Amino acid sequence: MRQYLLSIYQPDGPPPPPEVLEPIMTELGKLNEEMKAAGAWVFAVGLHPPASATVIRDRDGEPTLTDGPFTEGKEHMGGFTVINAEDLDAALDWGSRMAKVLAPLAIEVRPIQW
Amino acid sequence: MTEIERIFRAEYGRAVAVLIRYFGDIELAEEAVQEAFVAAVQRWPELGIPPSPAGWIITTARNRAIDHLRRESERPAREVTASGDTTLAEEPDDMLRLIFTCCHPALAPASRVALTLRLLGGLSTGEIARAFLVPEATMAQRISRAKAKIRDAGIPYRVPRDADLPDRLGAVLAVLYLIFNEGYAPSGGALVTRTEMTAEAIRLGRLVVVLMPDEPEARGLLALMLLIESRRAARVGADGDPVPLAAQDRGLWNRELIAEGQALVRGCLRRGRPGPYQIQAAINAVHADGVTDWRQVLALYDQLFALTPTSVVALHRAVAVSEVEGPGPALQIVEGLSSITGHHVWHVVRAELLHRLGRRAEAAAGFRRAAELAGNAAERRFLLGRADADDAED
Image (tube, rainbow over all chains, first blue to last red; front, top):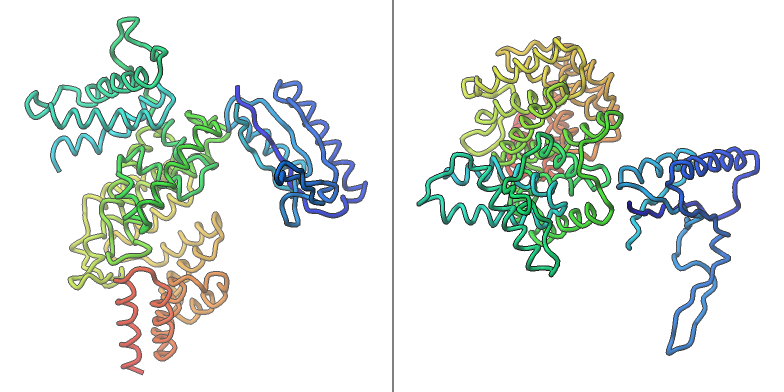
């Protein structure tokens, strides 16, 4: 069995209004339950906005901090799910389900190295 | 081509497919099969070609692969010899699995093409690089990245489920047609055609038809390739320039390929599950009839446009419209296709229509613009010739 990271990429800025967001979160909750029932679900989180991030680099043994996310740009990872899957096809099936629920957001499927 | 070269072309992909299934490692499989062929070149001249060349290659490659695994690690290699079994059974789906792995949609289209030619066709990285006009180092990197992705991302080595099959088969057919087109009408370089690419695409197309006999689009693609290939000798003039369909010497068309292609088209029609490749094959079958029945061609383009309403299909349909209704209505259609004006074929079709309408100066300018956009040197020369002729008559 392999593991894959399904990252959700979303545009920076305020989240959609509740009447748009709530049905999406309900569908996402259902998908998570389905993943759990299938033994695929390992771990899932949502993240605070990228502006809340801090980047650390070590300079001569001292941590240097930068305010904001590591990558520039208008889209950042907004959350992720780790799943167990037999192979890439199985991971892509779950990823496609997630992309459908979260459309038009992009889902990056990336194998976890053990 | 020597007998060993012929066997290499025919059996390389099969041997690699069997070894990948067994060892689960593309690099190891390729290396072992290549070594087995080197051994064949050394030993067959004196031993004679064995009764089952493919079996000999597969068994030799398996032994080489086990040697490699033993050398690389202290742990014993995965053994079949323990049970006294020294043959590696071939499974009917081995080749099909490898085709679907090479054409997996998670790989970039250019990588699918390269892997297919490498693993199934046994073409060297240099040969593939030359066919696609990229530096050999670039192609080597493209192939090794694709192999690494198959391994690291866990791209499966199997025939897709029925539910996924239409899409996945579509990806396979698209790769074969890309290989064919790059051979038939190279996007760059000096040659009008590259026969090794068209031959390889047709060989793989036949293989897919044998492996998946119930897929009408696979048959449609094979028919399409055979019918286009049948005109190859007539497509290049004595000066090396391309010859348009209407001006071709039909005596040079390959009747055998036409007969095979038309029989496949008839078989598809009987099945009654038309698709884009089958319809394009039917259009080419009409052209092969001797005198083209343009009304029938137009009806088929209408059907094709209903299935795949793209600007490129609309452009080719416009050519049929010009034959049935005249160049005026066709030009109106072509000028409406604003999304493909960066494509040299759009300028060729438009310039041809302007030429027929007697608007020679505009036609000449159009042929010049088409020549600027064409990547192929022979085609560029031909288009500039058309432009000069229109200028002279203007």
